[in-house]
Figure 1 (cartoon, helix red, strand yellow):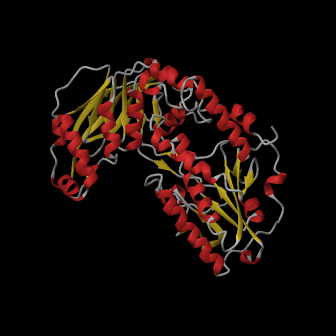
Figure 2 (cartoon, helix red, strand yellow):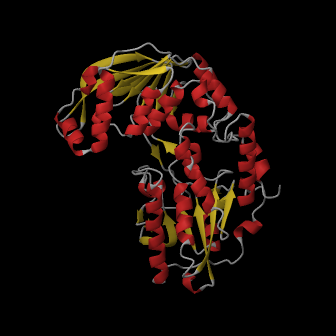
Figure 3 (cartoon, rainbow, N blue to C red):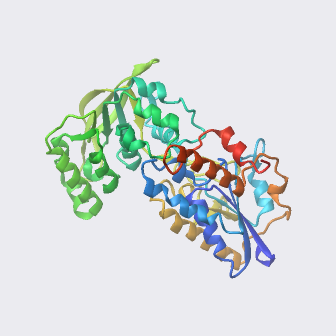
Length: 458
C-alpha cells in the first residue's frame, strides 16, 4: 500500500488556488511521511483564475498569487505547465498519472460559461463574460484582436448578471486610460479599451437589488470612476416582502440595497460613460443579424412570495451593440473521470471521487470542480484542506492503493514543458516588460512566447 513506501508521490492536476492550496496542505504532512507533489496545468503559467479571472485593476486581490507563488518555492514541489490531460491521444491520460503517483488530485476548476438559452444568443456580438475576461487578462487562448473591432463600433453594452464578474466587466469597460494604465493587462487590451466607443453600459438582473450576488466593495467602485456615473430607476428599489426578508437577514444584502437606494435618489449627472443598473429584467431575446447585435429584449419581472421570479408580460427593447452574459461558470468533464452533468462537478464525498460503486481509491478532487463555482479565493483553502484530510484518513486505513510505476512521468515526457524554473523566467520577463511602462508587470499573452521562455529545454 502507499503508506508503506519511503516516499509518497502525489499529482495535482490544476494549478489554480485549489490545486496550490491542496499541494501546500499535502506538504504539511511531511512530519509523518516524506512526500513530493507535482502540480500540473494545461497553461504555461500557474494560478488559474487568480491570473486569468480576477480583474487587472484589482491589484490587492491579484496579489494573492504572490502567496500562491511562494508555495512553489518548497523543495518538494514541482510545477509543470503546458501539459494537456486527456484520453492519451494528444496529451497525458489519467491512467498514466495514476500509474506514476500514489494519489491524484483533480483541481482543474470550472472554466466554461453557462448559456442563457435564449433566441439570438449565437449572434455575432453576443459573448460570454468568460471570453471577455480571458481577453482582458491576457489568457493565451484569447486572440489579441478578438474584441478590438467590436469595441470600436460599440456604443451600448448589455452585461447580463449581477455578480462580481459582471461588475468587473462593467467597471473595466467604463474606466479611462489613467485608471487602467498601471494594470498588468497586455498593451493590446489597454489600447482597445481606451479606444472603445462605449457610452452606455446596462447591468441587468432578473431579481432586485437585495437578491444580487455582488459584494459591497465591488459595487461601490462603480460610483468611484472618473468618467462614468451610475443610474438606477427609483422604481427598482421598492422592495417587496421577500426582498425585505432578505435585507433583514443578510448584512451584505442590506449594505448593497442601501448603496443602490442612494444612487436611485441622486441627481443624474452627465459623464462620458453611464452605467445603468436595470433590475427585475429577464432577457428573453437578442435581436440582430449576421452582422451583429442590435437590441436585447427583456421582460419585466416580479418576485413571488417565496422569492421566485415570474414574468409580468411587459417587454422592453434595449438598443445595444454588444451583449455579455455573466451568469456563471461551469465545470467540464475530464476523460476517465466520473462527472455529474446536471451539476457540472465531479461527484465526491468530502473530496473522494465517487464512482458507480463508491470512492475510487487514490483519486480526489478539490475546488470548483468539486463543489461548483462558489465562494471567494480563500474558500478554496478550506475546501482543499478537507480533501487532504480525506486522503490522510484513507492513507491511515490502507485505502490508498499506491503507484504501479516508480519511473518519473515527467522525465520521459517530450519537451516542451514549462517547469518551475521556466515559470520563473516567464515571471521575470513580465516584470521587465512592466518596468518599461512604469508598472509591476505586463502579462505575456502569447502561447508561443510563453512556451519559448518557459520550456525546460530552453
